[in-house]
Length: 183
Ligand SMILES: [Zn+2]
Image (tube, rainbow, N blue to C red; front, side, top):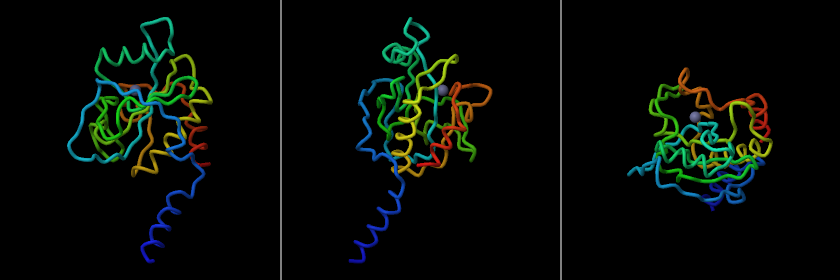
């Protein structure tokens, strides 16, 4: 009885927000063979890092296959990538360390941010902005991840590698933070 009440309170406590449950999120598994490594211990995931990507080598800037080819060539990958229609693709399992951040540092001093973060790429170039569909999917994905892990930071790549990285490009943090708070 006591345990039932205890767990009920836990569930209410963690689901008091109106976010889309993880299982209702349409995430398409598209696991890649490069750009990540398995770790033996469950890792502490405390940050979500937002990036921008586009295909610089082909005519279709927003084509996901071209973007994945680029990642493969340099052995990098995020955990998730969100296309222009807001479709979410999972490239690397959350528990694996994905190579998305490079030399980096969190505000609490943690270095090698790959080890303690999940990376999300939003497809856009330096000359355009994320679409509304991308903002919505990103918001839902982040809410889902926040319910699974003790997320302390939601930051841009430029926040953890200042001077070296400038993405996410043209990302409207003001609008996105309001969306996050409204959840
Ligand atoms: Zn980046």
